[in-house]
Image (tube, rainbow, N blue to C red; front, side):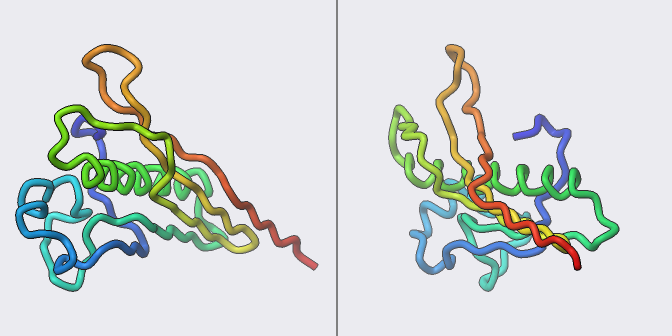
Length: 140
């Protein structure tokens, strides 16, 4: 997704489907797309579609937002891969199936992530992150 320039996905929290709920052949075929870590553990969810990133008051909001974008793009790719499993031509409906929440003191945000078709022939799909909720608590 990042052309080898990215880091491993390490969200503070994520949720998705249980391995047992996904057909074994689908997991084998889509493993690198639907598993957010190279370590396969039965307790770890597959096909993540909700992520949480948090920072302390001294943390960087910009870093947190980039982490949320990266998490959400992986989740959107996983969901899109599952929705199009077995199709010769992928369908892009523009709907969000992955959500990310970020929290740092006094600020909670919720984002929706979706995939759109490539804009050039032979190009790659594009991933989008949109703010859907912003809660800002002002101090005393």
